[in-house]
Length: 329
Image 1 (tube, rainbow, N blue to C red):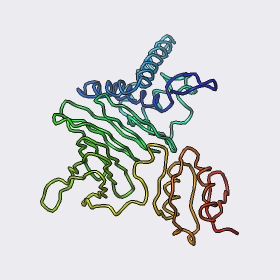
Image 2 (cartoon, rainbow, N blue to C red):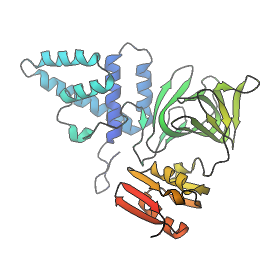
Image 3 (cartoon, helix red, strand yellow):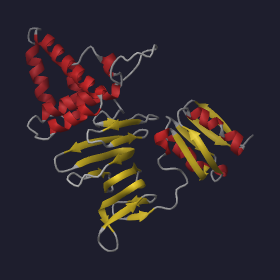
Image 4 (cartoon, helix red, strand yellow):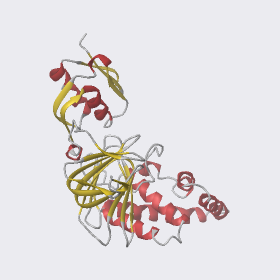
């Protein structure tokens, strides 16, 4: 929930409100879908903030629609807009219906819908990290600028990673396996903790405890690949290979940290850049400098300020959003 300057709770976050609007639209457009309402109920049960946003959006939508129907001729416009919205995709429908039935609440819903992953069941903005306790006891952590969808049925529990990175802590349930799908792979968690990261051309799987089975690929014996605690895999559309030793702790971000081990400066800055907006890079002449340590993510400017003391470099701010690391002048 968001808070006022005195620290008091004043309602659900803008992101959760957008997700509630998405669920309202999905249910309106696909009311006959047998499992959609069940999935919505799972989303509502995950966190009290979800239920509060759902109730407020439902209440506000009904109130404003009723008020508008009291205006002569408005019912024809509303019916036309509603019928048109059913033929549009969800992003267009959101703009159309929120402009009519949710008019007057722009400040409450947020000023800018563009760029926010409003269609995802769970999402984070750049620099944000959030955790969710799912109804089955699974713990889901989202890293910066990440989005995931939940699809639970009586046969399976499926989490689809749309972008970014998630950490999943789960128990074993033979009757309903826990699956995580990325663009390149399908992974079954078998009691433990694992991390799935969606990069541009591959998926990275890191298992902290327990084991994970890569269901979408097979080993040399034709069987699904089992990944044990401490192992890391790179999964492309056609192959799954053991990843080289990592130069950072794959799951430290869940504690708000970057923990590096002899990591290249350029790679380190690319990682830090995931948690801030704008352009962050270094001069090619110092890209291969190495650093090890524990760095806190809550303030990336303060994090960068450590580099001159550890590597003897200088930080140059062309603007707040354009930062380069260079050799001292």
